[in-house]
Structure formats: structure tokens, C-alpha cells
Amino acid sequence: MQINGSIQLVPYTEKFKESLQTFTLPEEQVQFTAHPMELLKKVEQDPTRNPIVILADNKPVGIFALQSGSRVQEYTNKENSLLLVSFSIDYIEQGKGYAKQALYQLTHYVDSYFPNIEEIVLAVNERNIPAQKLYVKVGFEDRGHRRMGPIGPQFVLYLSLEKKTSKDTR
Image (cartoon, rainbow, N blue to C red; front, side, top):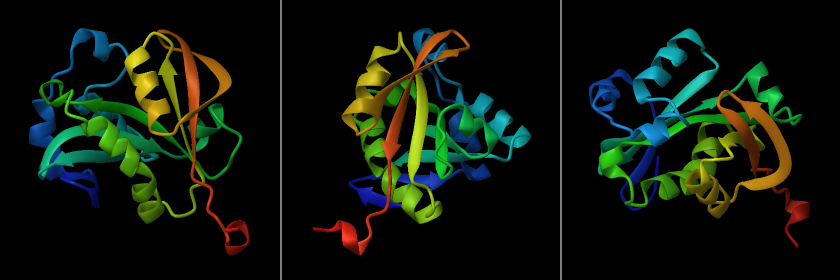
């Protein structure tokens, strides 16, 4: 699905595996997210994780997963929600706006592939200031919910996708 410029969000397929294996992440980022290959191992073991590849000019530059199932309920009471996990951009591709463009396209992707979803939720470590700023900038809300993550306190952020009905358009 291509919405804006050369960035696309596409479901993961094996054809992307070789490129994703070459991704690098600096140590300060690895503590907060999974390397793409680690994410794909988790996907093999857990069918509730749906991996999505971020393409720039048809080349993989990032990956994340949208998770369904019972784990989502640890973050929100809203039933029609997905959990965004393991978001990463290859280190050599960082600073080019790909993460922001991909997150702006997230609502269109979810509308196309998960039409019943009304909310995306994620947890971000309180020390991961750049990620917090990015998520808030693209529309995620901090509603004051906190949880303990694997390496410390996390902010839980929400992106509402509630569908507007004809009555809602005033």
C-alpha cells in the first residue's frame, strides 16, 4: 500500500528476509526494540503477530508488527485494538523521515488490512525520548497509563482509529 511518496507498508513475505538480515541497530536502540530477525522468530512462534515491512523505493528500510490476541488486553480494554511492537528502521536509513512517513500511513494500512480495528496501542520506554516524540507527533496520545516493561517503566500510547458514521460528520 503506497500512500505518500516512495514509502510503502506491505505485509512481510520471505522475499524480504535477506534484506532484513543485514539491518543494524545501535546498542542504545537495541535495548528498546527487537532486531528484525528476532521479531521474525517471534512471529514464527506467535501467529497473533503480523509483521509489516516499510519499503522506500521498494527496498526494505524498516519493520514492525501489529499484534492481536490476549496480549493486547494488557494495554487497553478496547476490544478492537492492535498492539504495535518491535518498530525499527535500519540504522543507515535513519534520519530520512521514513519512520514518520510509515507511522502516518499506519491508519490507511490498518483500514485496508484490519477494517474492524478502532485503536492501535503501543508501549514505549520512558528513556526512549526520540521514539516518544515521534509517536506523539504522528498522533498517538498519552492518556497517563504506565506499565513496567522488561527494562523499566513504559508509557502506553494510543492512536484512535474510530470510524466516523454519517451522523458524525457535521
